[in-house]
Image (cartoon, rainbow, N blue to C red; front, side, top):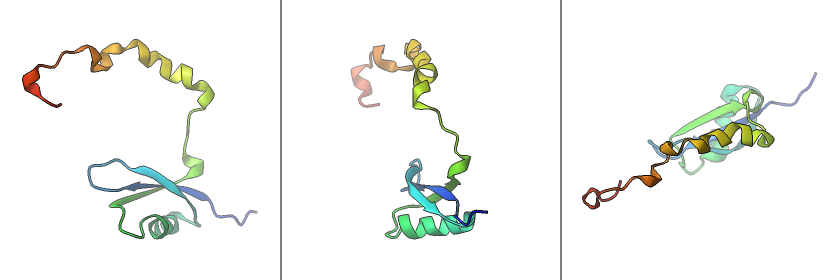
Amino acid sequence: MTTDWPLYEVFIRAKSGLSHRHAGSVHAADDEMALNHARDVYTRRNEGVSIWVVRSSEIVASDPQDSAALFEPAKDKIYRHPTFYEIPEDVGNM
């Protein structure tokens, strides 16, 4: 039996309307403790409006060696990138 606490990944949203960003990791005995540790460690100066904690063991990630199979097909879909559209001058910034 192990006595090590599980590792949690911490995500902080700095302001409303922004996406959460990975801030770091904390060890905790349970979800509530992880949330409290994350608050204490990563938002001491009121840096955030929202905190997510996720057990590291629950995160599923792609293997960098598989990047070609996962991301290369997107290069064939140039219509998803508006680089060939002409924007009229009276539109201004989009």
